[in-house]
Length: 299
Image 1 (cartoon, one colour):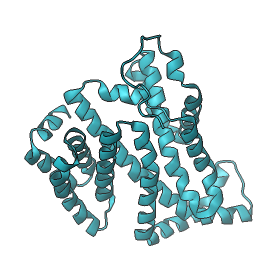
Image 2 (tube, helix red, strand yellow; image 1 turned 90 degrees about the vertical axis):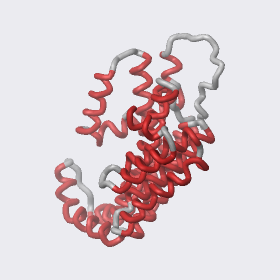
Image 3 (cartoon, rainbow, N blue to C red; image 1 turned 135 degrees about the horizontal axis):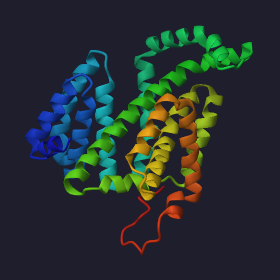
């Protein structure tokens, strides 16, 4: 991707070409969002505004045809890139993921209400079978309650997935920027990423207890995202400190894919515990005082 990043940074014309074409091609909207994030991070919103406009036009065409994903991801990545350039703090960006994901969820629920209801009906029909497969049982009242939560949870999942795609696009753009102008910079930032105890605790409470309050259930998957990213940053950071190599991280992600229902909560709880004890600071070898602020804008 270095060659693409170099081409984007040659000038506004090249950046506009990449952002617009990638936004127009199915499944390449994330490249458009990442390229736009790169321009914003390096040159600022004023310089990137014409590029943003040309990138949004194909995304608007997709939205008119019924696919909101390119538009939401491009705008979300652009907004978070502006915030990251201003605040220089990934922890602040992670907090913004929650209201962004909630906005996505509400919008998608209003636009895709009928498909969501149809999907919820299909899941309702299979709920007893699914519960039996998991070795659990739910009484009739509990089943009614689960069915009532399906639509908000599905909307929350969709909002969380869109917010995650926007965040990953931003991270890709930042990684490209670091590769061109500050090799290893993004890796160091990600390895230091950590939430404060108050924020991590609040997110954990939202994740665990929002399903108890009806429509607020949509917050559960969205609030879990910052904890997931912070937990992954912890594991990457520990692997870097111990010089374990990329093989261990590949194994981690393979296990995550095949056992997400177990690994996802574990990573979330690790992020919360790390917010209290800062494992990387305890394990890292002693270093002299740093001139820069190592807090990475922890909030």
